[in-house]
Length: 131
Image 1 (cartoon, rainbow, N blue to C red):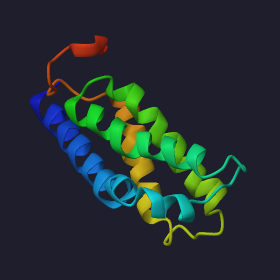
Image 2 (image 1 turned 90 degrees about the horizontal axis):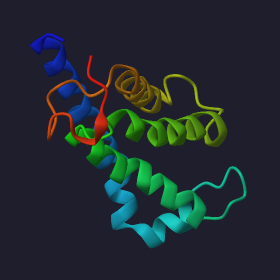
Image 3 (image 1 turned 90 degrees about the vertical axis):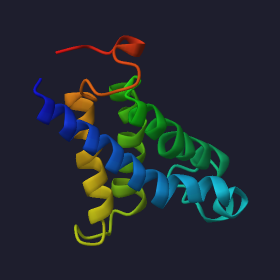
């Protein structure tokens, strides 16, 4: 991989994770009790079984991706939560209304396919596959 590709993947990791953490993850943690009363329940699992996986996908997984540790694996819960949000919770949204969610899906599917690149901490940690 060329340094430019590694730089692009680093930028994609940092910017995508920052947006996910800032807009969705951190507010869920800071306002946990309030979020329990507001979170959608598309499958009838109850608020805790909806909020806790969302926090895992929107807080824990982005931290792993930022570090480049098991980044491809960490993308999967994010992709799953985004697909549930876009297809089950908000199916009535137009592309314009859901553009943030679709763009996040594009970012995290790209990272799942391409991996984190070589610029991560520490390189080669957690058995990532090297190209």
